[in-house]
Structure formats: structure tokens, C-alpha cells
Image 1 (tube, rainbow, N blue to C red):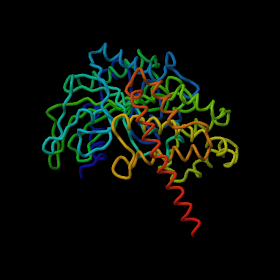
Image 2 (tube, helix red, strand yellow):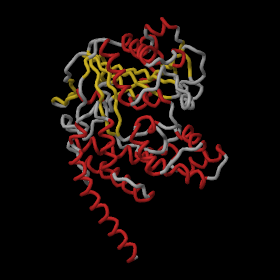
Image 3 (cartoon, rainbow, N blue to C red):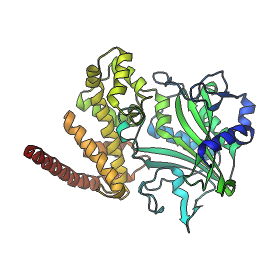
Image 4 (cartoon, rainbow, N blue to C red):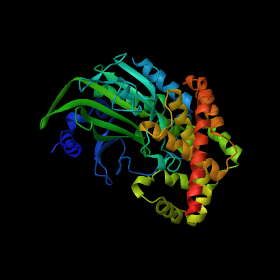
Length: 427
């Protein structure tokens, strides 16, 4: 049977062909097996685990300096421009070129086209980078809770369409981390994996990059296509590296949550206005919550109870401290997502992708009401637009449109709440 698991087993058995690259031999990386997930990885120092470990960078950043959201992209852009990559502007977050998709969810999607049922690529340069804003809504309950989940994020796309292959790709990865970011090489881990389209029309080995427990990038080598019960090489081999921009920012700063690093002055202003101040208990919680996924534990109170016991406090005490912060982070995230979507002609609705936008809008409004925060979504959007202006000036140009749409949606939401109250009273 043709599955990712069978491919992973085959590629792993042929690891010298699929995963060994020149930089591993040059620097002395050794292949090891993780005692937690039983997958193979490469590291310089003796390790028992790949990325299956607690975040060790929180409160302990190892980059040569702390960089904010804008500066991190500039460092990335300058490095790859010097190494023969053409920087291009982001594509819209509302996908108008793929009839099967509503949102842009990955940077490689910018260049994919469907031609008579076949996937083809259209690209402006052979080697390029793009600060592609992506929208994903499969982890909404995690947003604000884990410290690392977002509904919108920049995938710093590093792509090569036949320009170079694995050796050069991982060499650039290693040099960016060690030279541009200043990360000690012994803290870098490369994990073997497989990436595939759902129909296996394109797939290949991939190498994930971890540092101190945090995944920073995934280098996909789009190399094969399925033909019956076997596969063959694609005529055009594509390098598809998705760098987690938000994660690079967070890693460089070592803040309790990724939101504090990513939202910068926006979240500082929100905390000041709401009177929220971090204490030692919150910081300890944040370090543990980064490894928690609601979709894995299914019961957030069960997960919180486990953390509360670890910290030696009651669940009630823990919730009183962390829930206002989580609401604040979610509002910041959701407002930013809505601003990008509305800027790119997306509208909250009850159909298609618009439903996802309405869900996060109403989630943000409910948090505003529940915790009585003294600010509006319009003000948060204004702060986001100001902070992100060096990268995305178009956000500032669409603040009036954002305000008009949010005002309409607020009225609809309030009407829905009133109707619900009437129904409850009748019962």
C-alpha cells in the first residue's frame, strides 16, 4: 500500500540517498534514533531525542542578538539575496489562482497552478524568497493557549525551481542559522521525514530543522510522483523550504510565549491598557503550555490540571491567572488575521472560507466582552498596521474598510446574542 509511512520506511532504509548531505559530513553530524518518537535525526552532539523535548530557549535565547518581527525578515532577506535568491512580495491570503482552495496556506502555493487537472508551476525567478502570509484555521482552540499557534503567520518561503538541490539547500539552512542568526551549531538538529501531496502527485523526503525543542524550518525536496503502485522522478525538482518566521522571532527573544515576541508593541499596549502583568507562575505555565495541544488532549481542563499539579497550584488559581492572557493573545492574533483577509478582499460570512473569518471574529468579540478589555478590534488593527508597515504598507491603506466591515459584523453578532437570549428565556 502506498502511504507516507511506507515511504518513510523505504527512504529511511535508503538514508544515504535521501537524507545524507555534504554539510553533515563536513561538520561531523551523526545519524541517531530518537528514543521518544523512534525517528532518525542528525546532530553534532550526543543526543537521545530529536525535537521531542521541552523548549529550552525560553528565558535562554542563544542567537547572537534578539530580533523583532521586522528585523528578522530583513536578516533573512539580506542573507538569501546575497546567496542568489530574488526577494518577491507576498501573494494575497485569499487564493484566487487555485480553484480548489480559499486561503493561501503555504508559500509554495503562490506558484502552483492547476492545468487540465495537473499541477504545474509558474514562478518569477528560479531561486526566490517570499514573506508569504498564510491563514490556517485547524488550530483555533490552540491559539492564545499554547504560545505558538496562530491563525495567520509568515511562512518565509525559500524556493528553487530546478536551480539547486539538497546539498545546497541544507548548506544554506546551516549557514543562515549559524552565521546570520548566530545559533551555535551544536544546538541544531536535522530530522528525517517525508512530505507528500494527498494524492502523491508530488512527494519526497524532507528534513526538519529543530533548535532547543522548537521546529524552525522544513526543507521539502519535491522529487517524485506516483505512477500506479510505484513512482518516478518529476521532470522539475523543486526545493520548498518553509521557514517559520514567527518561530525565528520567538527563538531569538526567548519570551514566555511566541505572542509576546511576534506582536511586539501591539501586545505591550494591550497588556498596559488591560492592566495585566506577568508573574512567575504565568512564566512557568507558558514554558509548559508550549508543549500542549488541545486537539491532542481533547480536554483543556485536563491538560491544565496536569500543569497545575506540576506547578503546585489549584486549577482554579491557574485559570484565573492565565485565561485573561490567553484571551488577549487570541484577540491580537484574530484581529491581525482579519486585517490581512479584509485587505485582500476576504469578508466574514456563513459560507466557504468566510465562515472561518466569522468564527475568529466572534471569538475575539466574545473575549472582549467576557474580560471587559478597554479597547476595540479597530484599535488593535491600527496598531498592527503601524507595526507591520515596513513589510506590509497595504494594511494601513485598508483600515477604513476593516472598520466598516467589523462594525457590520458587530451588529450581526449582537443581534444573534439577543435572539439566543430570547430563546433561552422562552425555554
